[in-house]
Image (cartoon, rainbow, N blue to C red):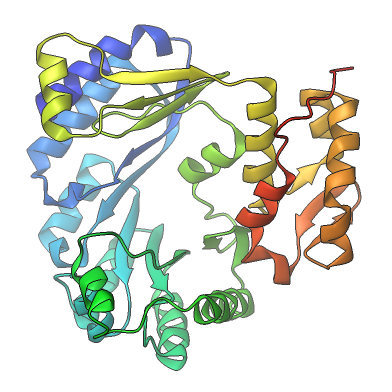
Length: 350
């Protein structure tokens, strides 16, 4: 797999020769299982084929059970300067339901090691787990911040098919996901982290000022990004691409020099819809002036017309030419954004 990924880096390098990358992110799986030599192999190939800035943000996603003092030191020596730690929950019961191999105690111990050696540490938290305690969730959030976490990513639980949790729910051994609970706990996390000085800079992401994820922010701001490996997505200009999903098919395509990704050119309508979706999820919101600059004044008129009922319902608000989600609207923002999409009407660019 590593050889295949290195070959993909080489194959795609010419198309990205004009870009300078500001982040290197190893994640979307379990890269903390790799040895130091394997991680170094990926980094060396990335640097051999692409240009990176001197102030690169180098993030490694890690599982709590993989964190040891020796590994922490090795990751740091490799150049990693930001860790993303998959804590998920502060209750062992929840972790068992989600088939995680670490315990809540493992999570806190791994965080203790991480913050002792890294200035930038993010933790992932899942809310909306059936039976999850509000009080333990809030206490856990406060504890990880007190321990030194500078960034928190909070995601609502999604039940994937053919998982242990899905089977428990089907057999009624565990309650199904409760949307009201998910919303209540989302707002609980939002209020708790805001009280602790964190910015809610994107729907699922919170950080103390100066510790926003540069990598994640690129997605929401439309910055070009390149993804390497099975299922990875890339974006540049008006084109989006996605790699073969299955590991075997990906490696086979590389070995046989066959296409490994599909792609599409985004229409103006597609780009408008993505701009609305990603911008409304962020602290920066939708700026009328940027909207006009990108798409033309007719799109601004269309957007203003579509947001009117959401402003009336106090789900969105406009201030100084920028539209953002209210506290009430933040949990519902994906649905709100999709209701604002341009589907049939395509105003002429002016």
